[in-house]
Amino acid sequence: MTAKNFALIGAAGYIAPRHMQAIKDTGNNLIAAFDPFDSVGILDRYFDDVDFFTEFERFDRHVELLRRHNRDKKVNYISICSPNYLHDAHIRFALRVEANPICEKPLVLNPWNLDALEELEQETGIRIYNILQLRVHRAIIDLKKKIEAQSSGQKQAIDLTYITSRGKWYFYSWKGEMQKSGGVATNIGIHFFDMLMWIFGKAKHSEVHLNDPKKMAGFIELENANVRWFLSLDKNDLPQDIRAKGQSTFRSITIDGEELEFSGGFTDLHTVVYRDILQGGGYGIAEARPSIELVHSIRHAKVVQGEDGTIHPQLQNNKRNSINGKK
Image 1: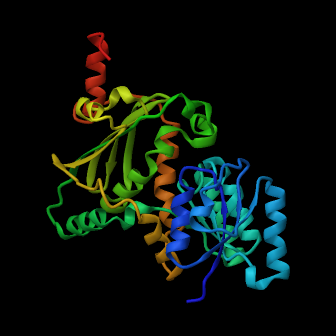
Image 2: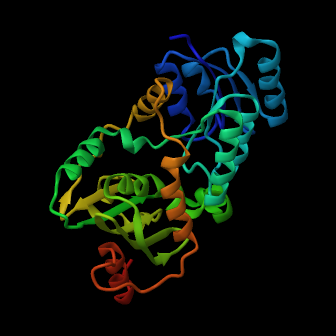
């Protein structure tokens, strides 16, 4: 297979190195990159001949000139690692320069943005791809096969808990602004919601029991599962044994009381997704839509108290501690 040319938007971001690694692992070329911040020395670890820009207008001009005047260096794919609220604009840019966008989650913040992008896909004939890497995790694939093989007809009882400690910087950055990141459920929860709907079916009912800039909790009834979920950026929510080990992240999914073990196997998932895209597969707008619609509804939902059995144990514990004056 002939090597493809990639450009990357958001080269200084946290997730960008995984895209650089995926481009390298699949035998392709990163020829241009953009970020308004110039702390991008990480590029040299993967590619040593990348045209880098801190002004989008110059990056735009460069990519356009390659398209028009240098077919050998025409950009075939654009990896988008920019802040969430810019994804839509950067996807449109990729389509304009006749390159397939490969975009980090969430593809867009609002469901109606997907409708407009679908029209552009049809007009241009260029497919838009989304990184939904949990769908290629071996443990998740095995779980999906196991659930599909069952025929009990009973709904699974699931508790999703994801706590990833973040310092004050987070809330001074774009990630702490609801209009730019979509908030906690969108920024750190959307992959898990996508995964659960991929396995257990569409969302039939959703409630929000807590909506705070640092944490959210609620309940989702899926076609084949009832999900109590808790997402937090607050280190005080970490289990004591996790804090004692000096760890800053706790990830847990229990299904009918049984823990799903998927703590490992994350390092090369972007490469797996890229390889799938390059071989004619990949996930696009249709696959991204259910989770984007769900987190949008969560973001705008009225907080309700919830009934017994629908409230996440962590939220119940936090309420008890609050009543007792504990942290």
